Length: 264
Image 1 (cartoon, rainbow, N blue to C red):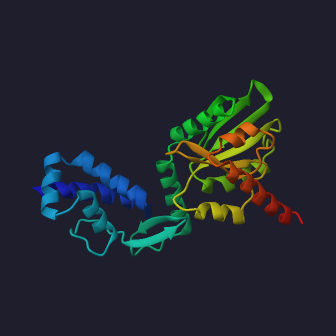
Image 2: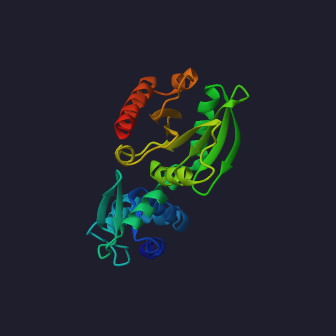
């Protein structure tokens, strides 16, 4: 009976995975955990872990992502791919397309960096810097807010919060090419979360331009913000509240050198 219960988990996972040809390791682990919790009783789980001699999440993950499936009903996604510092899996017979890999990365970015958590970090940071946060608005793929310094609308920042820096290039292109562009009275700031490795940031720095905006990096777990691109100017409160003010000065220096060479 225990294996009949496990079949329900495999059926749900197979249906979920069939909707995507590529899935990140993080999303797969999360889905396995959710399926076990929703479909198995505590007694069924305990019985299975005794019979399989291991933690059920680990056993199922190993069955799906390795050549050692312990059940014919286990989905097979043992082809491993590294992309942007994350690990992804796809079915061995699937010749994945780059857009599917990109979609899987962005899907995982939305899951791992909930908009609400990022927004709280940014709001707390701006308030520590003496700003009042106004007009927070959710868009399709990002959140926008206006932060005003000492109720002075001429000393304000228009902040765009994204779940990953990989969303930023298209956004910057669209804004630069639109008639509206960025509001001239505001300083524009793009905020993105930390990544598992520096790879996405290195890729962005080498291949893209932030336009008129600064880019800051938020660490949700630590509740901190650090600079990546751009100069906060004479706003000493911003620099003082970065987790690493020295990094702020280095970021400005490196970005300025890059822009100098691009404009030669």
